[in-house]
Length: 176
Image (cartoon, rainbow, N blue to C red):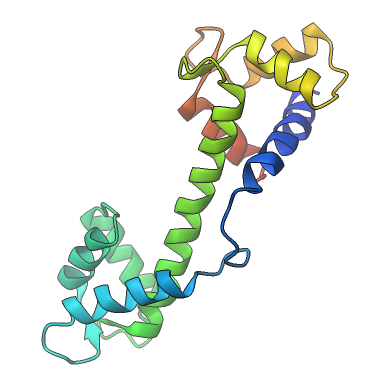
C-alpha cells in the first residue's frame, strides 16, 4: 500500500533532517528555552502571585512566539488547571509550553524534510522530486508506487504535494 511506502521513504528523509536538530532530549527543552519560559511567566505575573490568568497567559504565549485563540487559551487552562482556580502556576505553564514547543519543533522538522524533497524550491513536491529522493535513499520503488504516494497526499488535485499536504500526510503516518 502507498501509505506504507510513503512512511518508509519519508521516515528516511526525516531521519536525515533530524541530524541538524539541537540536542534537547526527545520532548525536553534546552536550559535556554526553560529560562525564556520563566522570564515570560515572571514578566506577565504582574501581581507577583506566582500564577497567571487567561489574559496574562495569552500575552505570555505571544511573547514566546505563539498566536493562541481565546478558545484555545480557555481549553489550555481547563486542561492544566487541576485545582480549578482559573489560573496556572509556573510548573503548569512550563508543562504546557514544553508540549507546545514540542509541537512547534515537530512541525519545523517536517518542514525541513519537505525542503529535502523540494530541492528545486517550487514549494511543492513533484513526481520528479519524489523519484530523486527515493533513488538517493536506495529505495526500489516503481513509478506507479511513487505516483500512488503523490496521489495519497495530494488533496487539491494539482498532481504535486504542497507544504500543508505534506504536513498532513506526515501527521497521518504518525512519524511525528
